[in-house]
Image (cartoon, rainbow, N blue to C red; front, side, top):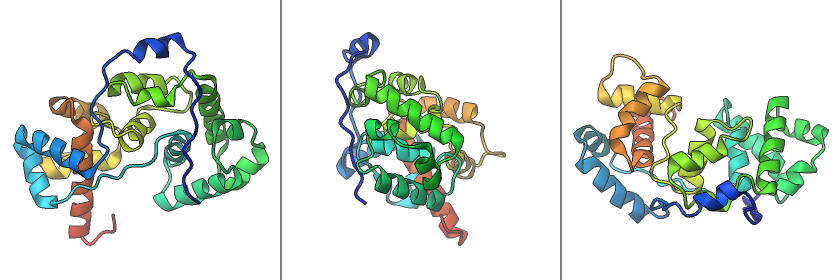
Length: 237
């Protein structure tokens, strides 16, 4: 089933309208964009330059913006990639197109049959209401700096920094979104930087401050290094 991009309603929140005037970051829309930002990033950090030399290629991994992609990231919370993909596939099949309005009108039994837990059903409803009402203007988030866009997304119950940052990075191409709570990123930092232990989310966020405004670019490089290291060990990644 092809991924659907939701039509986001006109922004009605005064705070959202104020934020629209804030200058936004450049986006990672193409492989060329990523290559440019990587070159700028590693020029200022020899450790990252060494990681890039090891992996060679860093994939862009962009997804269409919109409600459906946000749902996909939420569904993937604390699940394996295969399990999340199966649940999301069923949701997109039953609620085609997967829009806020269709999510709000979905029967609990249908969502349960798709594989959603009670907690994720509540989060889906909260997300759908926030987007449908305009309190979370998904279109406008693309024009905001990562920290401000994350703060708006995190007003939705069930959406935390990890979900918000993954949406900003992969669906909107924000080069500064950095999900420091991601375990693979933490492990990549431990391996790549020779740290004695895996850094906490807070510790990794502090390390990443040096990479502003390209923290998200560094995240893509760290994920690539994580996959490279696991393949080197013969572990599927």
